[in-house]
Length: 337
Image (cartoon, rainbow, N blue to C red; front, side, top):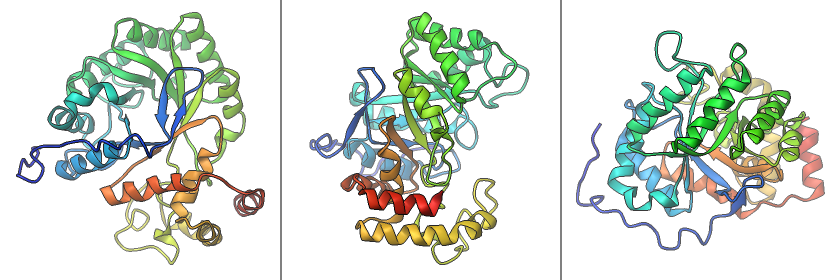
């Protein structure tokens, strides 16, 4: 896909005030500071999408001080196309800003046919990152994740591959995603012995999906790691979009496997009650949901997706009110517990 180089967007000049309003949080015990809100390219950046809209979203993100961009080998569709589109935009707009960006990729889910196209083998991880770097036009990523645990490959092999990726200069830091607490602890022990900068666990976390509170956040704290939370709005469920039913053109009104009519119907009363608390805080429900996650000390950043620049700006306004009273937290807990 091609970028439309009309006179309006031929030249991009970054906002000189971009770092003054963004909140940055330290990642574990590392030197890395992440923006409290980061941009994920899981949706809206594939070949099926408008690359000029993606370009506008990325420009808006950078102008807001969002320097962390999260990708994976299979983001699209088709798989790989989000990285390729990002690489095109990076070259046209952000080449001079590469050292200001903290770029992530991952591998673990199915990417190509055959026995070496998914999971956690050394063969797959190193091959996948080589492909990702080529698609993005990069010499290295700032962090590379193993995207999911592999029940059949020794953890020593998977973590050893991550270690070699760092030693080869293809990634500065490593992370894991979707690991349980016990697996996370073992991975941390292995990587510590290998002297590898392991800093982040990327986990699904929202008001309606709180599994990380059952041991994972404590495990991260004990090992000097941080969490970066994805799906903070439960695929759009915790927004004002479904307060009065399911719109026809919505994700829940379509064929999404992540959000459907049953999940909306079973949570509508909770959403409406939470929305009242948000209004009393002068926030939208989505903004309160993001703030609620960021209150956890182990959470370095919340990953949001965006279909437009306006949606991204709206989410970033969550940072205008990050504090909760004791009464608010109790009321929220009574609703979502």
